[in-house]
Length: 79
Image 1 (cartoon, rainbow, N blue to C red):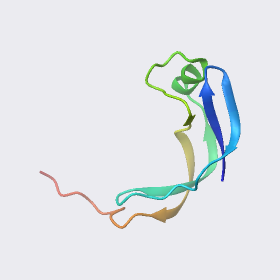
Image 2 (image 1 turned 90 degrees about the horizontal axis):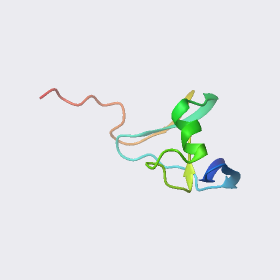
Image 3 (image 1 turned 45 degrees about the vertical axis):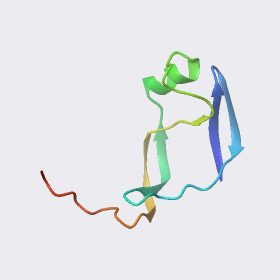
Image 4 (image 1 turned 135 degrees about the vertical axis):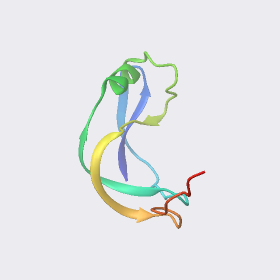
């Protein structure tokens, strides 16, 4: 699949990456709408030391769940 990969401050490229696979309690979402937030802009500019390239950024999106791990969607009991 194609993804926009952050390679370092002010460096991004469209690259072919492996298809994601969900972990046991995860889902895969096919994005249908996306946006960017301030932390992504700061990451792009190299102002956030918590981001290490290469990195596919993007957490502001909505879409359709296309795959789910075996435990996804199950509620965790309260403690």
